Image (tube, rainbow, N blue to C red; front, side, top):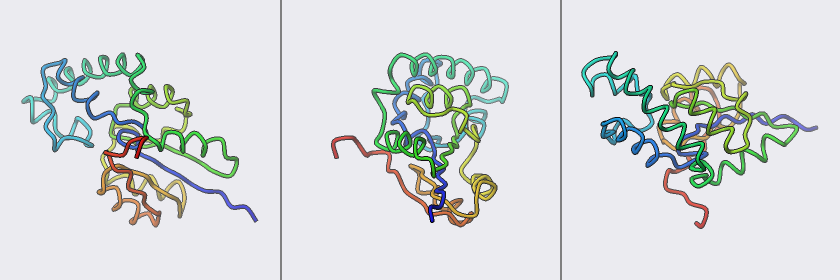
Amino acid sequence: MVSASMWCTDIDGVLIDSRELVKESYRSVGIEMPIEAWGHPWKQWLPAFVGSYEDAEKLHSKKTEMYTEVLKSGAVRDNALPFAMIARALERDPVSQVYYVTGAAEKTAITILSELGLNPKNLIASSIATTPRADILKKLSPYGVYVDDRIEGQVPAQDAGWKFIWAKQDWHWNQ
């Protein structure tokens, strides 16, 4: 008997190494992104960093426009990580179901997935922190595999009864 396999993966740091691209996009709007902000939605750190939610929203919108243009210029393919190839193979596998969650904005997540040749319709959550991901995983299936580049991703995976793969940020094609 063949059983379906359920996969859910983060995007930044799993499918592409976007750290420098994100930091550069924030620099383009005058923000030096603090290291502790990495992996967290802008709503969690940017308002306090710039002084107000309204200013943060404007800056983030400008940053997203800049970032999306950079992503469309070939940066996604240039910064693809090994799991992007695995995700493509899983999407073609008739017994696998693959979904994506991310702290990134929906527009950038869709751009990344599209540029990688992945199905953007499988994006089930964007602008979401790590903790609420357990509920998303539970709604998908009572079992599966969750892939994240942040070790904190282990908590929602365990809470949902899923297996966890830690895709370290520093992996490269030639390792």
